[in-house]
Length: 364
Image (cartoon, rainbow, N blue to C red; front, side):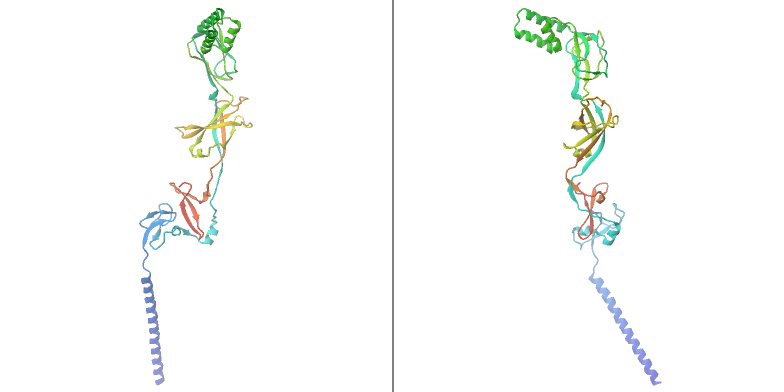
C-alpha cells in the first residue's frame, strides 16, 4: 500500500514538472513573437507603380492601366536606385522561357523599298512656237497633237507684212549706200520680230524680198498643242505649236515623309517599267523637290532617265527601288521594344539579372 502511494506521488510530481516546462516554452515562444513583431514595424508605402512604367505613380493599389498586372508598392526604406524598379527572374526560368539578351551597338542599316512612280515629259525640253508679228496662215502641214516631229520639220507657211516691209528697207539701204550700222540694225529688227535665221541669210545672199515664210519645229519631240487652219489670221504672240522633248524623260514618285531622312546623295534608285520588264533604264540623275504635296503630305522625287529609243511614254507606270543606308544609330532588337501607343520603351537587363523598362533612347 505504501509502495502504491509512492508511485502516485511520483506521477503527480512528474506531471507538474511537464506542465511547468510546457508553460515556460509557450511563454518564451509568445514573448519571442511579440518581441519580433515589435522589432519589425510596418513598412511605409510611398506610392504604387507599374514595373513596366516605373515613372508613373499611383496613390493606391490596384490593377495597372498599362499592363494586366497588379501595381507594386514603393516603400520608404527602399533606395532610389535603378534596381528598385527592376524585376528579377530566376535564371532557370529565364532559360526555360528562352529569353535572350543582346548588346546594344551603333551602326547603319541597309534600307530598300519599292515606290510606285510614273513617267512624264521633261519640262526642260518644252518649247512654245509663236508668231511675233501679225499675219495670216498660207499653209498648214499635215500635223496634229500627239505627232512626233524632228528638229526642222515644217509646221506652217505664213505671210507677215511687217517682215516684208523690213526686207524692203534692207534692200534700199544696201542699194543706196547705207552705213553698216544701219544695215545691221534692220537685220537685227527682223530677227527680233521672229523672222527665221535661214530666211534672213537667204535675204542677204539673194537680195530678193520673200513674202512667204515656213515656221519649223525647233527641237525633236511630240506636239502637245497645235490648232491652226489654212487662211487663219495670226495675231502677235499667237501660239503656233507647243512641243515637248522625249529624250530624256522624267520619272516622278511620292516618298513618305517618314523616310525623308534616308534620301541623300549616295542613295541609289533602280527603275523598272511593267511595260518593259526585261529592260533596264539607268538613272542619269535625281533630285528631291523642295515642296511637299499639300494633300498627301509626301515628298516629290524626280529622276531623269535616258529615252533614246523612246520606249518610255509619258503616263506610263513605273516602280522605283530605293537602296540606301541609314545614318549611324543605336541598333536595338525589335523584340526588346514595347510600343505603348504613346511612346516606345526598351527592356534592359543589368549584371545582376534585373529586368527594367526604359524610354527608347532613339526617340528621347
